[in-house]
Image: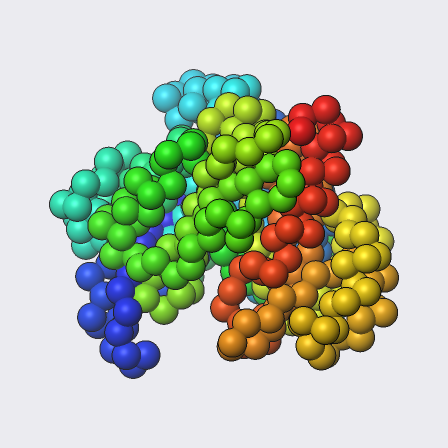
Length: 385
């Protein structure tokens, strides 16, 4: 169906993979269930500058579903929609879209050994969805296995070390829908954020600690992540090499609904809230995406009036940051530049972050107040604050 797997622990850089009981190579794919995969593929091709590389549908034997695989650098998105549900998988996809709207069903992780990863996960309390199995075609063999995480999200553990096809067996190479820009807009998935119910954040962080041997990387609670009206709490888990990072958010008690409350209400439960996409030139990325019709959250000019006093100098002049509404954060390791899209579908659920890192491995703590106030302004327009 798709791809995924885990990793963990902290070890010396050269020995992390050998010492890690749950080694991972990185994110394999973010898999979406959508109402119309063809239109989604066009949207992400045109708006995000991604390149269509593979397809599966009725023309090559998939009578139940159509799937489009798009890439930008190492980042891979898969959009799947149901043509006519005939199996449990097809009914799951159809029901998922009906209940949740377009959303992420699988954070697939590439692993060196899917069988070993699956066995470790189950031994440590994971619920298996698909046992390890091989899928083959003329390009070789892929080993897949899946485990459950929060909500109806899964992690497919993917071992593609014996495969050189465009994506997975059952997929054929495809021509781009639109020609991607000469300079790609982003090159990797930086992190994927999950929203869970009140009181469940620690439970799911413990799940990743135990099942995948991930370690806790960051924690944001209390005033770290609150405004006058809304609040949330967040912890970040990551594998030993920090190639795979999963912030987990839960709502906190406040005067009004937080963005997490809004997401849980409109998504119909826990799920993936946003993906952060790594870019080497956030200014060029934002300009390209704006020109293609992608909308970003607005930030008041007052944010930039004192920016230099606490964020220091960055490679991008403050005037350009102000013009493009790009946020800055700095910590002991360096700084980062970031910006957030508005929700990319009618439900106020899934959105994206563009991030450019210069040493900092943080998540924009200094921007939380400005960001959440921007989100609150959008919530108020929707009548959901």
